[in-house]
Amino acid sequence: MLSLRMRRLLAKLVPIKFNFSKNKSTGGCSEIPEEVMEEMEAGFKNLCYSDSKSLLKKHLTREVFDKLKEKTTPTYNSTLLDCIRSGVCNFNSHVGIYAPDPEAYSTFADIFDPIIEEYHGFKKADKHPASCFGYGADFPDLDPERKFIVSTRVRCGRSVKNFPFNPCLTQCDYAQLQTMVTKALGNLCGEHAGKYYPLCEMDEKTKKKLVAKHYLFKEDDPFLEEAKALRYWPLGRGIWINKTGLPFLVWLNEEDHIRIIAMEEGGNLGRVYERMIIGVESLAHQMQFNHDKRLGYLTFCPTNLGTSIRASVHIKLPSIFNDRSTLEEVAGKYNLQVRGTHGEHTEAVGGVFDVSNKRRMGLTEYETITEMYNGIQALIDAECKKSAEMERKAKNAPKEKPKEEKARDAQKKLEEHRKAMACKCEPKKDNKCGTPKKDQKSEKPKKDHKSEKPKKDNKCEKPKKDPKCEKKKDDKCEKKKDNKCDKKKK
Image (cartoon, rainbow, N blue to C red):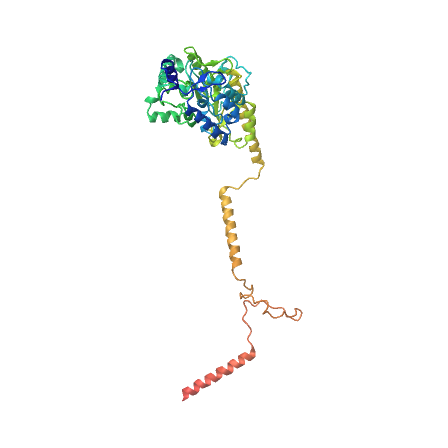
Protein backbone atom coordinates (compact mmCIF):
# COMPACT_ATOMS: atom_id res chain seq x y z
CA MET A 1 0.00 0.00 0.00
CA LEU A 2 1.38 3.40 -0.99
CA SER A 3 2.15 5.95 1.70
CA LEU A 4 0.07 9.11 1.80
CA ARG A 5 3.04 11.22 0.74
CA MET A 6 3.71 9.00 -2.30
CA ARG A 7 0.05 9.04 -3.26
CA ARG A 8 0.04 12.81 -3.13
CA LEU A 9 3.07 12.92 -5.43
CA LEU A 10 1.51 10.43 -7.86
CA ALA A 11 -1.67 12.49 -7.99
CA LYS A 12 0.32 15.32 -9.52
CA LEU A 13 2.07 13.11 -12.09
CA VAL A 14 -0.57 10.55 -13.04
CA PRO A 15 -4.31 11.22 -13.52
CA ILE A 16 -5.45 8.72 -10.87
CA LYS A 17 -8.61 9.48 -8.90
CA PHE A 18 -8.51 8.95 -5.16
CA ASN A 19 -11.45 8.96 -2.80
CA PHE A 20 -11.12 12.42 -1.19
CA SER A 21 -13.26 13.85 1.59
CA LYS A 22 -14.19 17.50 1.31
CA ASN A 23 -12.73 19.73 4.01
CA LYS A 24 -15.64 22.04 4.77
CA SER A 25 -13.65 24.28 7.10
CA THR A 26 -11.01 25.24 4.55
CA GLY A 27 -12.83 24.56 1.30
CA GLY A 28 -9.97 22.29 0.12
CA CYS A 29 -9.48 18.55 -0.11
CA SER A 30 -7.95 16.20 2.44
CA GLU A 31 -6.61 12.81 1.49
CA ILE A 32 -8.38 10.68 4.07
CA PRO A 33 -9.17 7.12 2.89
CA GLU A 34 -12.53 5.63 3.85
CA GLU A 35 -10.94 2.95 6.06
CA VAL A 36 -9.19 5.70 8.07
CA MET A 37 -12.49 7.56 8.55
CA GLU A 38 -14.17 4.33 9.68
CA GLU A 39 -11.39 3.54 12.12
CA MET A 40 -11.49 7.09 13.47
CA GLU A 41 -15.27 6.96 13.99
CA ALA A 42 -15.10 3.53 15.67
CA GLY A 43 -12.27 4.66 17.95
CA PHE A 44 -14.18 7.77 19.01
CA LYS A 45 -17.29 5.73 19.89
CA ASN A 46 -15.23 3.20 21.89
CA LEU A 47 -13.63 6.05 23.83
CA CYS A 48 -17.02 7.62 24.59
CA TYR A 49 -18.40 4.38 26.01
CA SER A 50 -15.22 3.51 27.94
CA ASP A 51 -14.40 4.23 31.60
CA SER A 52 -11.29 6.17 30.56
CA LYS A 53 -10.35 9.21 32.65
CA SER A 54 -7.97 10.65 30.08
CA LEU A 55 -7.84 14.30 29.12
CA LEU A 56 -8.61 13.22 25.55
CA LYS A 57 -11.98 11.76 26.52
CA LYS A 58 -12.80 14.82 28.60
CA HIS A 59 -12.17 17.34 25.82
CA LEU A 60 -12.92 15.39 22.61
CA THR A 61 -16.64 16.07 22.34
CA ARG A 62 -18.77 15.11 19.35
CA GLU A 63 -18.74 18.73 18.21
CA VAL A 64 -14.91 18.93 18.31
CA PHE A 65 -14.56 15.51 16.67
CA ASP A 66 -16.84 16.44 13.75
CA LYS A 67 -14.97 19.70 13.29
CA LEU A 68 -11.52 18.04 13.10
CA LYS A 69 -12.11 14.59 11.57
CA GLU A 70 -11.71 15.77 7.96
CA LYS A 71 -8.66 17.95 8.53
CA THR A 72 -5.06 17.07 7.67
CA THR A 73 -1.76 18.84 8.29
CA PRO A 74 -0.47 20.78 5.25
CA THR A 75 2.94 19.13 4.77
CA TYR A 76 2.65 15.60 6.17
CA ASN A 77 -1.09 14.85 5.70
CA SER A 78 -1.50 13.73 9.32
CA THR A 79 -5.09 13.10 10.39
CA LEU A 80 -6.93 13.36 13.68
CA LEU A 81 -6.63 9.57 13.94
CA ASP A 82 -2.83 9.90 14.00
CA CYS A 83 -3.24 12.15 17.04
CA ILE A 84 -5.79 10.14 19.03
CA ARG A 85 -4.97 6.54 18.00
CA SER A 86 -3.08 5.73 21.23
CA GLY A 87 -5.76 7.28 23.47
CA VAL A 88 -8.67 5.39 21.86
CA CYS A 89 -6.79 2.08 22.27
CA ASN A 90 -5.33 2.61 25.78
CA PHE A 91 -8.11 3.66 28.11
CA ASN A 92 -5.68 3.91 31.03
CA SER A 93 -3.88 6.84 29.39
CA HIS A 94 -3.63 10.02 31.44
CA VAL A 95 -3.42 12.33 28.41
CA GLY A 96 -4.18 10.11 25.40
CA ILE A 97 -2.96 12.31 22.53
CA TYR A 98 0.26 12.77 20.54
CA ALA A 99 1.31 15.13 17.75
CA PRO A 100 2.37 13.16 14.63
CA ASP A 101 4.17 16.22 13.25
CA PRO A 102 4.93 19.83 14.31
CA GLU A 103 1.98 21.21 12.31
CA ALA A 104 -0.55 19.13 14.26
CA TYR A 105 -0.55 21.60 17.16
CA SER A 106 -2.01 24.32 14.93
CA THR A 107 -4.17 22.16 12.62
CA PHE A 108 -5.84 20.36 15.55
CA ALA A 109 -5.63 23.24 18.03
CA ASP A 110 -9.28 22.73 19.08
CA ILE A 111 -8.31 19.52 20.88
CA PHE A 112 -4.67 20.26 21.78
CA ASP A 113 -5.23 23.69 23.38
CA PRO A 114 -7.72 22.63 26.11
CA ILE A 115 -5.56 19.61 26.99
CA ILE A 116 -2.43 21.80 27.19
CA GLU A 117 -4.28 24.30 29.37
CA GLU A 118 -5.47 21.68 31.84
CA TYR A 119 -2.11 19.92 32.08
CA HIS A 120 0.26 22.92 32.12
CA GLY A 121 -2.10 25.73 33.18
CA PHE A 122 -1.05 27.39 29.91
CA LYS A 123 -3.99 29.24 28.33
CA LYS A 124 -4.62 29.88 24.67
CA ALA A 125 -3.73 33.56 25.03
CA ASP A 126 -0.47 32.80 26.90
CA LYS A 127 2.94 32.93 25.29
CA HIS A 128 5.93 30.86 26.30
CA PRO A 129 8.93 33.01 27.38
CA ALA A 130 12.32 33.01 25.69
CA SER A 131 14.78 30.31 26.69
CA CYS A 132 16.91 31.03 29.79
CA PHE A 133 18.92 28.22 31.40
CA GLY A 134 20.75 30.19 34.09
CA TYR A 135 23.50 28.42 36.06
CA GLY A 136 23.48 25.07 37.80
CA ALA A 137 25.74 26.46 40.54
CA ASP A 138 22.72 28.33 41.93
CA PHE A 139 21.31 25.05 43.25
CA PRO A 140 23.38 23.48 46.08
CA ASP A 141 23.17 19.80 46.98
CA LEU A 142 19.71 19.08 48.45
CA ASP A 143 20.86 16.05 50.47
CA PRO A 144 24.63 16.07 51.22
CA GLU A 145 24.30 13.20 53.71
CA ARG A 146 22.21 11.13 51.26
CA LYS A 147 19.52 10.30 53.79
CA PHE A 148 16.62 10.89 51.40
CA ILE A 149 17.59 11.33 47.72
CA VAL A 150 18.75 8.17 45.97
CA SER A 151 19.45 9.68 42.54
CA THR A 152 18.87 12.80 40.42
CA ARG A 153 18.17 13.07 36.71
CA VAL A 154 17.49 15.98 34.33
CA ARG A 155 16.53 15.55 30.71
CA CYS A 156 15.03 17.56 27.85
CA GLY A 157 13.63 16.60 24.47
CA ARG A 158 14.30 18.13 21.09
CA SER A 159 12.91 17.52 17.61
CA VAL A 160 15.02 18.35 14.55
CA LYS A 161 13.61 20.93 12.17
CA ASN A 162 12.20 19.82 8.77
CA PHE A 163 11.39 16.33 10.04
CA PRO A 164 8.00 15.00 11.21
CA PHE A 165 7.64 13.04 14.45
CA ASN A 166 7.86 9.26 14.77
CA PRO A 167 4.49 8.20 13.25
CA CYS A 168 5.32 9.98 9.97
CA LEU A 169 9.04 9.17 9.73
CA THR A 170 10.10 6.93 6.84
CA GLN A 171 13.02 4.49 6.86
CA CYS A 172 15.01 7.06 4.92
CA ASP A 173 14.15 9.74 7.53
CA TYR A 174 15.39 7.51 10.37
CA ALA A 175 18.69 6.84 8.62
CA GLN A 176 19.16 10.53 7.79
CA LEU A 177 18.39 11.65 11.35
CA GLN A 178 20.79 9.12 12.82
CA THR A 179 23.61 10.30 10.55
CA MET A 180 22.94 13.98 11.31
CA VAL A 181 22.70 13.63 15.10
CA THR A 182 25.66 11.25 15.55
CA LYS A 183 27.84 13.62 13.54
CA ALA A 184 26.94 16.45 15.94
CA LEU A 185 27.49 14.21 18.98
CA GLY A 186 30.94 13.31 17.69
CA ASN A 187 31.99 16.94 18.10
CA LEU A 188 31.30 16.94 21.87
CA CYS A 189 34.37 17.19 24.09
CA GLY A 190 35.40 16.88 27.73
CA GLU A 191 33.09 14.87 29.98
CA HIS A 192 30.43 14.87 27.20
CA ALA A 193 32.63 13.02 24.70
CA GLY A 194 31.67 9.39 24.21
CA LYS A 195 30.48 6.70 21.83
CA TYR A 196 27.27 6.01 19.92
CA TYR A 197 25.70 2.54 20.21
CA PRO A 198 23.08 1.79 17.51
CA LEU A 199 20.30 -0.43 18.81
CA CYS A 200 20.31 -2.69 15.74
CA GLU A 201 23.92 -3.71 16.49
CA MET A 202 23.45 -4.21 20.24
CA ASP A 203 23.19 -7.73 21.69
CA GLU A 204 20.51 -8.65 24.25
CA LYS A 205 22.98 -8.95 27.12
CA THR A 206 24.21 -5.37 26.63
CA LYS A 207 20.63 -4.10 26.30
CA LYS A 208 19.56 -5.69 29.59
CA LYS A 209 22.65 -4.34 31.31
CA LEU A 210 21.97 -0.77 30.13
CA VAL A 211 18.27 -0.98 30.98
CA ALA A 212 19.14 -2.20 34.50
CA LYS A 213 21.42 0.84 34.94
CA HIS A 214 18.54 3.10 33.74
CA TYR A 215 20.66 4.15 30.76
CA LEU A 216 18.63 2.64 27.93
CA PHE A 217 14.95 3.01 27.04
CA LYS A 218 12.62 0.01 26.80
CA GLU A 219 11.04 -1.03 23.52
CA ASP A 220 7.69 -2.39 24.75
CA ASP A 221 5.75 0.80 25.54
CA PRO A 222 2.08 0.09 24.59
CA PHE A 223 1.24 3.81 24.39
CA LEU A 224 4.00 4.51 21.86
CA GLU A 225 3.24 1.33 19.96
CA GLU A 226 -0.41 2.26 19.39
CA ALA A 227 0.68 5.77 18.39
CA LYS A 228 2.80 4.20 15.61
CA ALA A 229 5.96 5.58 17.20
CA LEU A 230 7.79 2.23 17.12
CA ARG A 231 7.70 1.69 13.37
CA TYR A 232 10.78 0.15 11.69
CA TRP A 233 12.20 -0.68 15.14
CA PRO A 234 15.18 -0.70 15.85
CA LEU A 235 16.18 1.22 12.71
CA GLY A 236 17.58 4.67 13.52
CA ARG A 237 17.45 4.12 17.31
CA GLY A 238 20.47 4.23 19.56
CA ILE A 239 22.20 5.74 22.59
CA TRP A 240 25.21 8.02 23.14
CA ILE A 241 27.16 7.32 26.35
CA ASN A 242 30.01 9.51 27.58
CA LYS A 243 33.31 7.79 28.37
CA THR A 244 34.52 9.72 31.43
CA GLY A 245 32.97 11.59 34.34
CA LEU A 246 29.42 11.38 35.60
CA PRO A 247 26.76 9.95 33.27
CA PHE A 248 25.72 11.97 30.21
CA LEU A 249 23.44 10.23 27.69
CA VAL A 250 21.60 11.03 24.47
CA TRP A 251 18.70 8.86 23.25
CA LEU A 252 18.01 8.89 19.54
CA ASN A 253 14.49 8.40 18.08
CA GLU A 254 12.93 6.83 21.18
CA GLU A 255 9.90 9.15 21.66
CA ASP A 256 11.41 12.40 20.43
CA HIS A 257 14.20 12.75 17.89
CA ILE A 258 16.65 13.55 20.70
CA ARG A 259 16.56 13.12 24.49
CA ILE A 260 19.51 14.77 26.29
CA ILE A 261 20.01 13.26 29.77
CA ALA A 262 22.33 13.94 32.73
CA MET A 263 22.11 11.84 35.89
CA GLU A 264 23.98 10.78 39.02
CA GLU A 265 23.49 9.30 42.47
CA GLY A 266 22.60 11.65 45.33
CA GLY A 267 20.83 15.01 45.38
CA ASN A 268 23.19 17.42 43.61
CA LEU A 269 20.53 18.84 41.25
CA GLY A 270 22.66 21.88 40.28
CA ARG A 271 25.58 19.76 39.03
CA VAL A 272 23.32 17.47 37.01
CA TYR A 273 21.46 20.45 35.50
CA GLU A 274 24.71 22.19 34.48
CA ARG A 275 25.93 19.04 32.70
CA MET A 276 22.67 18.84 30.72
CA ILE A 277 22.80 22.55 29.77
CA ILE A 278 26.24 22.15 28.18
CA GLY A 279 25.07 19.14 26.17
CA VAL A 280 21.91 20.85 24.88
CA GLU A 281 23.62 24.08 23.90
CA SER A 282 26.46 22.20 22.18
CA LEU A 283 23.96 20.40 19.94
CA ALA A 284 21.92 23.59 19.35
CA HIS A 285 24.98 25.21 17.76
CA GLN A 286 25.13 22.43 15.15
CA MET A 287 21.46 21.87 14.20
CA GLN A 288 18.07 23.59 14.33
CA PHE A 289 15.21 22.41 16.51
CA ASN A 290 11.44 22.74 16.05
CA HIS A 291 10.29 25.80 18.01
CA ASP A 292 7.00 27.71 18.15
CA LYS A 293 6.68 31.34 19.29
CA ARG A 294 3.67 30.56 21.48
CA LEU A 295 4.29 26.95 22.60
CA GLY A 296 8.10 26.89 22.86
CA TYR A 297 9.98 23.73 21.84
CA LEU A 298 7.72 21.25 20.01
CA THR A 299 7.75 17.60 21.00
CA PHE A 300 5.84 14.41 20.20
CA CYS A 301 3.89 14.46 23.48
CA PRO A 302 2.13 17.70 24.53
CA THR A 303 3.21 17.16 28.15
CA ASN A 304 6.79 17.98 27.14
CA LEU A 305 6.12 21.24 25.29
CA GLY A 306 7.73 24.55 26.27
CA THR A 307 11.03 24.00 28.03
CA SER A 308 10.64 20.21 27.50
CA ILE A 309 12.66 19.81 30.73
CA ARG A 310 11.87 17.04 33.20
CA ALA A 311 13.93 17.09 36.38
CA SER A 312 13.32 14.13 38.66
CA VAL A 313 14.64 12.51 41.82
CA HIS A 314 14.19 9.09 43.41
CA ILE A 315 13.49 10.07 46.99
CA LYS A 316 12.86 8.01 50.15
CA LEU A 317 9.82 9.23 52.09
CA PRO A 318 8.98 6.38 54.50
CA SER A 319 7.26 8.57 57.11
CA ILE A 320 4.82 10.30 54.74
CA PHE A 321 4.47 7.21 52.55
CA ASN A 322 0.89 6.64 53.76
CA ASP A 323 0.15 10.31 54.47
CA ARG A 324 -1.26 11.14 51.05
CA SER A 325 -2.71 14.46 52.20
CA THR A 326 0.75 15.88 53.02
CA LEU A 327 2.22 14.45 49.83
CA GLU A 328 -0.53 15.91 47.64
CA GLU A 329 -0.43 19.26 49.43
CA VAL A 330 3.29 19.77 48.75
CA ALA A 331 3.01 18.39 45.21
CA GLY A 332 0.14 20.74 44.41
CA LYS A 333 1.88 23.80 45.85
CA TYR A 334 5.08 23.29 43.83
CA ASN A 335 3.52 21.65 40.73
CA LEU A 336 5.25 18.32 41.29
CA GLN A 337 4.32 14.98 39.76
CA VAL A 338 4.63 12.07 42.20
CA ARG A 339 4.85 8.60 40.65
CA GLY A 340 5.93 5.10 41.68
CA THR A 341 9.55 3.98 41.87
CA HIS A 342 9.66 2.89 38.22
CA GLY A 343 7.50 5.67 36.81
CA GLU A 344 3.84 5.96 35.90
CA HIS A 345 1.45 3.08 36.78
CA THR A 346 3.97 1.57 39.28
CA GLU A 347 4.10 1.27 43.09
CA ALA A 348 6.46 3.13 45.44
CA VAL A 349 8.74 0.25 46.51
CA GLY A 350 10.07 0.76 50.04
CA GLY A 351 8.65 4.29 50.20
CA VAL A 352 10.82 5.46 47.25
CA PHE A 353 8.99 7.86 44.91
CA ASP A 354 9.84 9.29 41.49
CA VAL A 355 9.16 13.02 41.89
CA SER A 356 9.45 15.44 38.98
CA ASN A 357 8.33 18.89 37.84
CA LYS A 358 4.92 18.91 36.17
CA ARG A 359 4.99 22.39 34.61
CA ARG A 360 7.10 22.89 31.50
CA MET A 361 5.23 25.74 29.84
CA GLY A 362 4.88 29.42 30.66
CA LEU A 363 8.19 29.61 32.53
CA THR A 364 11.89 29.49 31.65
CA GLU A 365 14.20 26.52 32.16
CA TYR A 366 15.75 28.24 35.16
CA GLU A 367 12.32 28.87 36.73
CA THR A 368 11.36 25.24 36.09
CA ILE A 369 14.40 23.94 38.00
CA THR A 370 13.90 26.51 40.78
CA GLU A 371 10.30 25.37 41.34
CA MET A 372 11.40 21.74 41.32
CA TYR A 373 14.29 22.46 43.73
CA ASN A 374 12.00 24.23 46.24
CA GLY A 375 9.43 21.45 46.01
CA ILE A 376 11.95 18.70 46.81
CA GLN A 377 13.26 20.75 49.75
CA ALA A 378 9.67 21.07 51.04
CA LEU A 379 9.18 17.29 50.77
CA ILE A 380 12.35 16.64 52.77
CA ASP A 381 11.19 19.12 55.44
CA ALA A 382 7.78 17.41 55.61
CA GLU A 383 9.45 14.00 55.93
CA CYS A 384 11.69 15.21 58.80
CA LYS A 385 8.72 16.79 60.59
CA LYS A 386 6.61 13.64 60.25
CA SER A 387 9.50 11.42 61.36
CA ALA A 388 10.09 13.54 64.50
CA GLU A 389 6.38 13.43 65.30
CA MET A 390 6.32 9.65 65.00
CA GLU A 391 9.37 9.36 67.29
CA ARG A 392 7.68 11.48 69.97
CA LYS A 393 4.58 9.32 69.84
CA ALA A 394 6.71 6.18 70.07
CA LYS A 395 8.47 7.47 73.22
CA ASN A 396 5.21 8.38 74.98
CA ALA A 397 3.49 5.16 74.07
CA PRO A 398 3.77 2.18 76.48
CA LYS A 399 6.64 -0.08 75.60
CA GLU A 400 5.67 -3.24 73.87
CA LYS A 401 6.95 -6.60 75.02
CA PRO A 402 9.54 -8.36 72.89
CA LYS A 403 8.22 -10.88 70.37
CA GLU A 404 9.60 -13.87 72.31
CA GLU A 405 7.91 -12.74 75.54
CA LYS A 406 4.65 -12.17 73.66
CA ALA A 407 4.86 -15.69 72.26
CA ARG A 408 5.44 -17.18 75.74
CA ASP A 409 2.48 -15.27 77.18
CA ALA A 410 0.27 -16.43 74.36
CA GLN A 411 1.34 -20.05 74.90
CA LYS A 412 0.66 -19.73 78.63
CA LYS A 413 -2.83 -18.38 78.03
CA LEU A 414 -3.51 -21.18 75.57
CA GLU A 415 -2.50 -23.84 78.08
CA GLU A 416 -4.66 -22.24 80.78
CA HIS A 417 -7.57 -22.15 78.40
CA ARG A 418 -7.13 -25.84 77.55
CA LYS A 419 -7.04 -26.81 81.26
CA ALA A 420 -10.19 -24.80 81.94
CA MET A 421 -11.97 -26.50 79.03
CA ALA A 422 -10.81 -29.95 80.26
CA CYS A 423 -12.20 -29.27 83.77
CA LYS A 424 -15.58 -28.31 82.32
CA CYS A 425 -15.78 -31.56 80.37
CA GLU A 426 -14.92 -33.85 83.38
CA PRO A 427 -17.73 -34.99 85.87
CA LYS A 428 -17.68 -33.03 89.16
CA LYS A 429 -16.54 -34.98 92.29
CA ASP A 430 -17.17 -34.60 96.04
CA ASN A 431 -14.27 -32.84 97.71
CA LYS A 432 -14.19 -35.11 100.79
CA CYS A 433 -14.45 -38.71 99.68
CA GLY A 434 -13.94 -38.39 95.94
CA THR A 435 -17.31 -40.00 95.08
CA PRO A 436 -19.63 -38.47 92.55
CA LYS A 437 -22.25 -36.15 94.01
CA LYS A 438 -25.69 -37.66 94.37
CA ASP A 439 -28.62 -36.34 92.52
CA GLN A 440 -30.33 -33.56 94.42
CA LYS A 441 -33.71 -35.30 94.08
CA SER A 442 -32.47 -38.49 95.80
CA GLU A 443 -30.73 -36.66 98.62
CA LYS A 444 -32.26 -36.93 102.10
CA PRO A 445 -33.39 -33.78 103.83
CA LYS A 446 -30.70 -32.18 105.86
CA LYS A 447 -30.81 -32.55 109.64
CA ASP A 448 -31.08 -29.65 112.00
CA HIS A 449 -27.67 -28.07 112.52
CA LYS A 450 -28.35 -27.55 116.22
CA SER A 451 -28.88 -31.27 117.00
CA GLU A 452 -26.05 -32.34 114.76
CA LYS A 453 -22.75 -32.97 116.45
CA PRO A 454 -19.63 -31.45 114.94
CA LYS A 455 -17.96 -33.94 112.68
CA LYS A 456 -14.31 -34.65 112.90
CA ASP A 457 -12.06 -34.97 109.93
CA ASN A 458 -11.97 -38.73 109.46
CA LYS A 459 -9.94 -38.80 106.30
CA CYS A 460 -6.97 -40.56 107.92
CA GLU A 461 -8.84 -42.38 110.80
CA LYS A 462 -10.16 -45.95 110.58
CA PRO A 463 -13.92 -46.36 110.80
CA LYS A 464 -15.19 -47.40 114.29
CA LYS A 465 -16.42 -50.99 114.70
CA ASP A 466 -19.94 -51.71 115.84
CA PRO A 467 -19.86 -54.01 119.04
CA LYS A 468 -22.96 -55.95 117.88
CA CYS A 469 -21.31 -56.79 114.57
CA GLU A 470 -18.15 -57.90 116.37
CA LYS A 471 -20.05 -60.40 118.58
CA LYS A 472 -21.75 -61.94 115.55
CA LYS A 473 -18.42 -62.35 113.80
CA ASP A 474 -16.87 -64.02 116.91
CA ASP A 475 -19.75 -66.52 117.15
CA LYS A 476 -19.40 -67.46 113.50
CA CYS A 477 -15.63 -67.92 113.85
CA GLU A 478 -16.02 -70.13 116.92
CA LYS A 479 -18.55 -72.31 115.13
CA LYS A 480 -16.23 -72.73 112.18
CA LYS A 481 -13.32 -73.65 114.43
CA ASP A 482 -15.42 -76.25 116.29
CA ASN A 483 -16.52 -77.85 113.05
CA LYS A 484 -12.92 -78.08 111.85
CA CYS A 485 -11.81 -79.70 115.14
CA ASP A 486 -14.65 -82.26 114.99
CA LYS A 487 -13.69 -83.28 111.50
CA LYS A 488 -10.06 -83.82 112.53
CA LYS A 489 -11.07 -85.96 115.45
CA LYS A 490 -13.24 -88.16 113.28
